[in-house]
Image 1 (tube, rainbow, N blue to C red):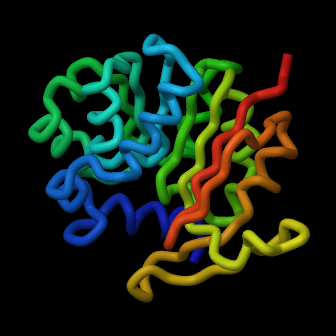
Image 2 (image 1 turned 180 degrees about the vertical axis):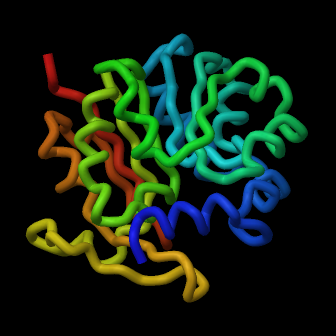
Length: 209
């Protein structure tokens, strides 16, 4: 299964893990964790990008807490229609891109965003588009946050060229990577990390001058 097949399946996703699914459940503990982290490190006027924003529950939580310069990328065909129905102020005020992450980020300027974050999204990127990780570092001026399922990758002494893969509902590949090893190669230093039952939350700050 190549990256285009994976993207197409997410673009057409309905039911569980769809934009409607996430809109139904709304902001959660992860939303609060991201907000708390941003309040710790950046000002309210920070330019923020979410990768794989779906219908916007995490961004909506940030918006409610005073962060207003918000942007998101999502491949699902229904994501932004559901956002407009569920979080109309966010949909009106934010900037959104309906496409694959790897098709969008190359067009962003260096250090365009103060904050870039991902919640269970980078883990689905196929190895043939891993070049995008360096681009994410390029567009991030200050803070990069990953909330991803790392699986056994956490204990690996070195990042494998081929990450371990499992499948969500025997359908969607989930690539387990150690995100510390990925992003510290690109002038970022990890300033916080917390392992949960499923995901590891890592916060990185840019050391680039």
